Amino acid sequence: EDVLTLAIRSWPDESKALEAKVLLGIAQFYAKYQGKFSHEEFITKMNVTDINRIYRRAQYHMDDGGHASTATAKALEEAYNKGKRTRRLESK
Image 1 (tube, helix red, strand yellow):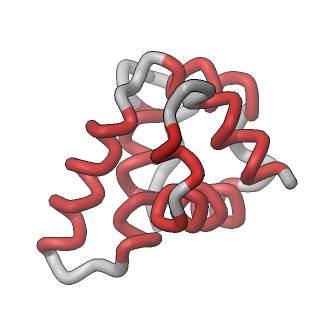
Image 2: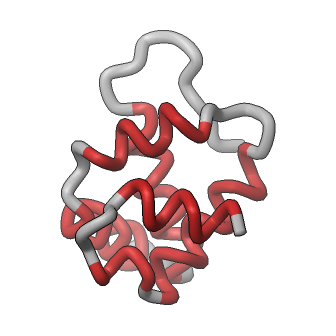
């Protein structure tokens, strides 16, 4: 439920937000950072991030041999952290 809410509220007018690659990427991001990120901040950041940019960054990460959902989660992490000097999410 949280994953669908994040997708719909992040890109309300974008049908690509409900594609499996995006939903699985959000699910992976959510599982990895649960309790470490603000849902509202995620939505605010994604509202100003073109979903096609998420797709391009995910493709870049897949070119390095990553799985689609992992690559999308990484692209979401990058978008969430963009412009932040503090409270950045760190990959482990």
